[in-house]
Image 1 (cartoon, helix red, strand yellow):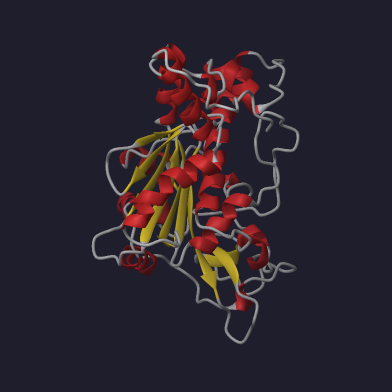
Image 2 (cartoon, rainbow, N blue to C red; image 1 turned 90 degrees about the horizontal axis):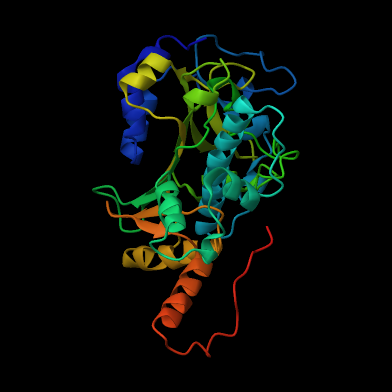
Length: 358
């Protein structure tokens, strides 16, 4: 089901992908058939009550009105970004797992994320890799599939940034976006020991760090879509302050009373060169720093938060040249190994970084 003709409009998809400022996202919203905002348009006990057919509606993230307290748990702008990057790593692992099951349905599950990465990508823990080795080359190639982009669009104030997290992992079909990427405290990972997260909570905190709107889009990888809709599910998220109420919440655009998100057909996604995977964009994201301090602080902050990640990623910090991000454990052992290779003393080293417990 489409809401009027939105799922067949290539220009609308291109507008969404280019939306990186408050002005652009508001221009996009003005083109959409959105029902007038008001608390009466969502009643969990009776979702169909006063639902306007043919309109998009703002419904609470996780279909829960009381979601603000949990979404606002993060105490620093970088923390939710680390959560999003972990989700992206899981997307690559899950795609590899589903590919494995296509060829061998009885293949046992990896019992940890590191076991999964070693089995599917032939990569040891990153802090055990030497630069310019075959393992390093494989890890570097995979890091290109996960990207954290921080930019300050033209005309924006010095502390107003747009943050985008992109991955080329398994992605989601349109029918499952609201059940996974827009769910809250609801996880499908509990029986998958090779996944990292489990509570379905952390990444949603990025909505709190966004002072304007966020948008997301996801498309299932073509080799593991399972015969389901091959289009791209998408939505826009904002902080809603209901009139005459004191319980603000975070809401996303849904196209039906069950919470399903609007989508673009496979033909439209192909025309816009939209690849598989998921993208989250946060407009006017509060990194709690200003100007040059963001450039200076983000690189060490992310390497600290993801100290020894199972997969690397790329950081685009206000430019087109990425920094490969392998975590501080890799950075420390890389320096130690270089000192040893040069025959210098490493007596100052009082710690080693073996396998880390997940």
